[in-house]
Length: 466
Image 1 (cartoon, one colour):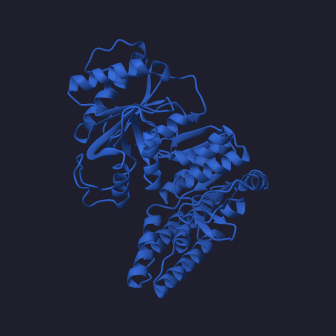
Image 2 (cartoon, rainbow, N blue to C red; image 1 turned 135 degrees about the vertical axis):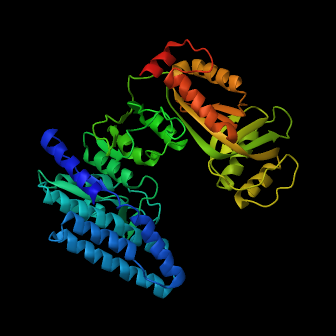
Image 3 (cartoon, rainbow, N blue to C red; image 1 turned 180 degrees about the vertical axis):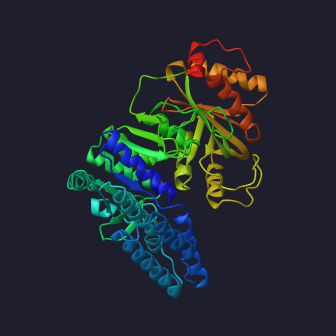
């Protein structure tokens, strides 16, 4: 309840003191999504209908906010009753399809939006709750990972224009409907994707994503306590950071805004005065390094051709094998006769030395190794981490010179490196047990003015002083 009060006070302040005319996209309250999933599993596996945690949270919040006289309060009660009936169907049939799971999960966002709309009206801000599908969010039928159809864009633009003046629309995030009218969830990107989509389709000035940190940070503050917000990043830089470990904003969520070049600002709902991070197509504030992130639990695959030197088709065979076995890659480095790469998720296979049996493990990875063994020797090893630096491409040589001097000073072996095709990231593979040491040392070099090796480049001094 307290968080809803704070959000509504924030909206009211934006309207009254900053001349903004916002619309909101809401996620589910607290642990509601997890509790709905737990209730669905209990109904499926034990035949029991138990929605107590979800019902208790929402009824207590209605009481604490004192909004029981709002028509939205009765709608929330009706949604809770409907959710129980759906769970009863799951328990009776002993079946939980992806379609049913999406329907069950949707109740969280639908109740949350009504709660916020009721509180806004109570504090004097005219607000209406709108289901995303009523605003035109039409998706395909890939339940659990639905994609918004292009035909939704003009519908959203038209229906946003129909929202009454001086009225805040509180829109359900994370969900939509397919053409058959069945509820779907958007999967990756969630409510952030909904906000970006509606803002982009309707041509808003800016999309703001409110989190619990002061924007995108220079590093994970758990490893680097001196990490600080990055004031400006490009869409490309933000996507690279998210892909390689930063969890503030999913790359998918930025795609609609990027498509029409609408800025996205990441703000902190606990610290609304902080400027946050502004994400745009380009900016003029380019330090030597913008941010550093890392990804743990990485597996590395070394592939060495057994064909004659200079024979063409080796890389084609490698990538064909990855496509066939549906395995994606994080980082890659190649030469004429060998390829080293990392997998984008751990496939749980024991270490495989060249020539050793594959053994137990992921069927996909075993299939990959078998296919590649026709043209190459293959070794799969785990115990690696990726350190990624988002850097100024024009000065990448300076960045790499500093990075390798630091790694040498600390005695950390760089097992592989790659400068991404995007030209904004430099990625290093290091032993997993040295990840945090490497991350903190590099952060001190580029952002804290406390490097383990002498650094005189002006760009580093600027970054540290920023």
